[in-house]
Image 1 (cartoon, rainbow, N blue to C red):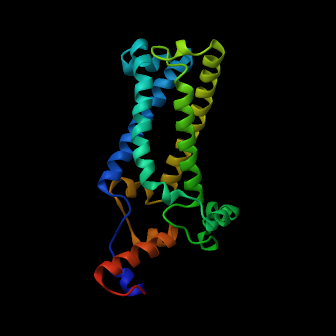
Image 2: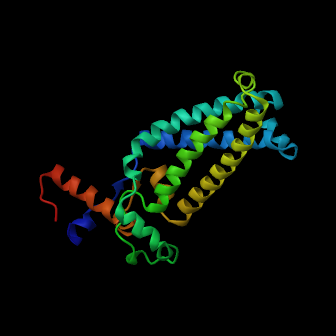
Amino acid sequence: MSARDLRRIDRIERYSPGVRIVHWIVAVSFVLLALSGLALFHPAMFWLTNLFGGGPWTRILHPFIGCFLVVVFAKLGAQFWRDNLMQQRDWEWLRKSGDEIRNREENLPEVGRYNAGQKLLFFTLVGCLVCLLLSGIPIWRAYFSAYFSVRLVRLGALSHAFFAFVMICAIIVHIYAAIWVKGSVRAMTRGWVTPGWAWKHHRAWFRDVTKAAAALRGAPPK
C-alpha cells in the first residue's frame, strides 16, 4: 500500500461491537470475582462482602460468578485462539523485548494482531482460569467438597489462592500495558485504531488488513 493510500484511511476496525461487549462482560465479571474472592480470602478484607449483600451471599455468588466468567471467556478465547498462537517471529520478539520497553520498536520483527507478550498473557489467563476452575470444585462446599478428602480440599484452597494471585497480577499487567500503549484502550472502547497506530505496533497485522481491504475493493494490493 502506498503512502497516498495510507493517508486516505481514517481508521481501521480492530474489534467488532460483539467482541467488545463480550470483553467488557469478562472485565466486569473478573472485577466482581476478584472482589468477592478477596473478601473471602482474609478477615481484613471481609468488609468487601458488603458489596454482595454480606458474607453468606458472597460465598454463594463467588463460585457462580467464576463459572460464568469461564464460560464467557471461553467464547472470547475461542475467537482469538489462532491469533495468539506463537510463531517464529514471536520468539525473536521476546529476545528483543527490551527494545519494546525502550520504545525502539523499529528493531523488533513485524508483529501480527498480537505481540509475543500479549500472547503469553493470553495463555497465562487461560491456564489460570482452568486451574481456578479445577481447584474451585473441591472447595465448593455446597455441592462438591463432601466428595473429596480434607487433604484435597486444603490443597484446592491453596491452589485456588495461588492461581487467583497470578491472574490478578496478569490482569494488572494487561491494564497497565493498555494504558501505556496509547490508543489501545480506544481500540476496545470504540473498536478502531488509526493506521499510524497499526503500522507502529502491529505492522504485519496492518499489512494483512490492508491487503484484505484492497482485495474486497478489487484493487491489487501494493
